[in-house]
Length: 192
Image (tube, rainbow, N blue to C red; front, top):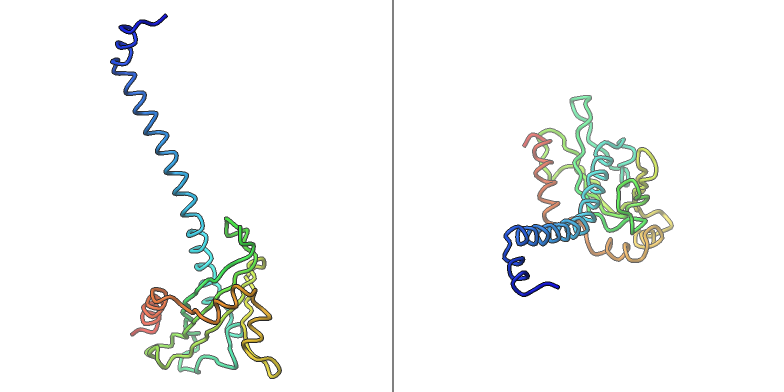
């Protein structure tokens, strides 16, 4: 049996308290790291989706970007002017995806400007609107919501987008931070 004196000596032993403290710190660290991973994973995935969409749209052939016949103005140079895009992701499928490779479709909004040299943003050719990006193909497929002679824009949007994303697409475009970043990138690309 353990006497009170032996128990008191045991508790006073310094190595015991060091071990208790190390165990508590280790357990706390594990909990915090696991919690941080769970919170940053969706944001990281969101950032990866935005980056992939931006890269795809900025490198896409102009034929994929033309909205209602808009295209860049012919210039003195044969070089294709860069396209600078701002992206807003409304959602993706499957919604429970945790890695970019698992994402099949992305519903979002894009605002792109053709950055011709010394042409300010206010008079630049712009391409904008809700879009669906098919991430299951390489390169990703781009499907822009546009009206036709027979179907109004809003009806076409509702046909193409799930209801929860169609509502967002009717109300929201780029965030102020994304718009500011796009304008900064556009001005740099246009040499302004």
